[in-house]
Image (spheres, rainbow, N blue to C red):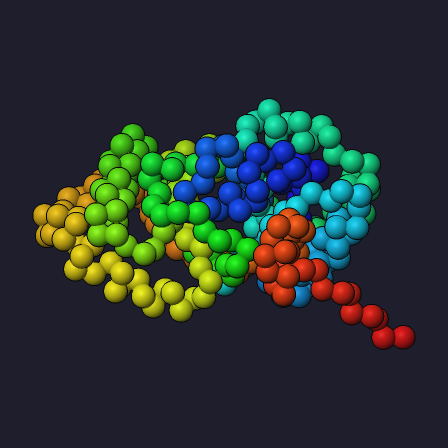
Length: 277
């Protein structure tokens, strides 16, 4: 799980944690942290049990601060722990204000991480609202997040941005029903790394992608010439692009009260299963 700095996600956020991956995130949260844990092969179940116990211990402390976990369904075996702050000053203030109880929980559970993990990485991202499309996602009632990581060639960020703005304008002109947010990594990963997030209630929504981005979208993009221009911009700007799908992991999260109220069947902590004598 997180180091001390990573266990205080939403405590100082101006908005609720729904702003975390909201499709057009409010500018109040300009520091979005993701701690990526890479799980050893064969250690997934044991790691899940360890993290679930850690999350329960955190929830039992006085005034626990929420954090959200999600587990990958595709790609390398990873779990992401996510947090959001208005500013770096708020991030620092949260770290300085960690309670003794939270420190004790971390001291108890952190050493065992070496048994389950290959490595971990903390990334800091900033919102690029001008590149995203659609309104805020109803995150408490979502189950999946599709994550596209884009590596942009040094010196070619302007082409990438132009291409994303073309796609956004076409979405707006065609009044498409999908939505997504775009974030840029500011530290913890190579410069030119961007992430696009799409929140989903069901993976079945992926089936509609080709239909949504059909003739109306292509026409709004500018037809064949628009498609060629977008392809040229992408070719000039993008080194690589990868999409993976994640599922929220309530058992390893300390969900905000608003999320539990909105969807208690999914986010309300489950009672621990008694051990057999």
